[in-house]
Image (tube, rainbow, N blue to C red; front, side, top):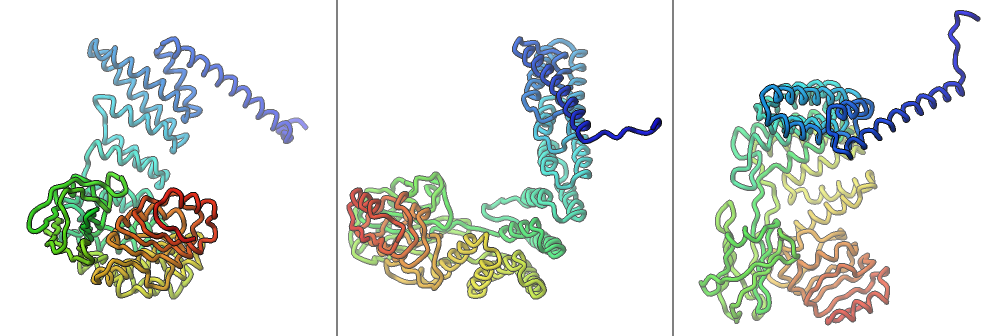
Length: 539
């Protein structure tokens, strides 16, 4: 049998691999022990650099060893840079060697967090970084794996330091996306570049501020549609499309105000900070501006409902106005005395998204395309959800019925996300009700649509209400803290919901709380709850 290669049996191969593993482990332990000893004794020298390099060449993810190397290089830099030019040149060589080591390690593991971080540290530490070279490094690794998010992150870092042409970077993302549309990192980087190319100079205004930008918005929508239709089951393009649809003007508004002898509140469409409303909001009583202090209703730094503490005595027959300076001008809200000593002021709501005419035309074209694709693939959740989003963006009020029907269908074909679809049904249905409620007088809130709500969106718009009927819904206990946005509520009906506990129920000046029909609430907890409250609790 001479001249034939002996084939090892499985047991022989297993034993051989175990011997190799033990030999490597022995070498590794010896090296680590020596490294730890030298570090402990403060021997930060070139021998320690060599030892750590050998170990990292086999396993680049031991971040402790990268920390050791940074300690050594920092010590060298502190000593050598204070001596002469020759030693400074040697320091530069050490930095080059460190970059070479990181690149060797990245060839082994292109997703090594530690190696990428070490490279960032070197480039921000040395006095002469070559950022153009680093862009070339990014290009090389993105050719190997165009979806490596660590490489994309590193590229954003390099760009932030070197400040290359944003147009060139934008074209780079286009090139990568044409190679492979299924590239979350490229889409994400593209969104960051767009924001930088078209900055928000006026506040709340993103990509659609000029004819040139309208053209870009349309082009992006066309490109992402092409990507999404190439592979409807791939989610990366759909997510970028959702971001694009949100890139419209948003203006914070003062929506509802209440003045009573005991409390004055201001409700905003979006969270605002104290300095913002202090500068832009005024309360006038009988043509005299009232001074006071702003307190967030929820205790958050940024809040949608603010309490205005002042010393003005409130009597019947007063003329009360609120003024809020938004980016579109000064909004004036005139108060109505709904009941004796209870003054309420409301602004008409408008939840429509302010796209430009050309963008609306493009959205309508893409809506037609989505309908055609749905005819071929009626159960494709991404196409159906995008169709629904388009309907809402184009005219949520006009298409509300179809929107809700689509979301109900999505609940059946995408059961893992039923909670999300229920939330959208609740949010958009509440918006439709608000269109009517903001025009009515009165201090009551009652859900008047057939779909049961599962959450409490836009509740600050109803902060003026004294009677709130949320009975026969699907509210759960995690939503109870939101009720803090009803500071003027006296009667609250939560009958026949799905509450399981009263933990998190906020401090409200109620007179009556109805908890009947919440089968999972225990009598013991309700009795303990009653003892801590001064209002009537029905259970």
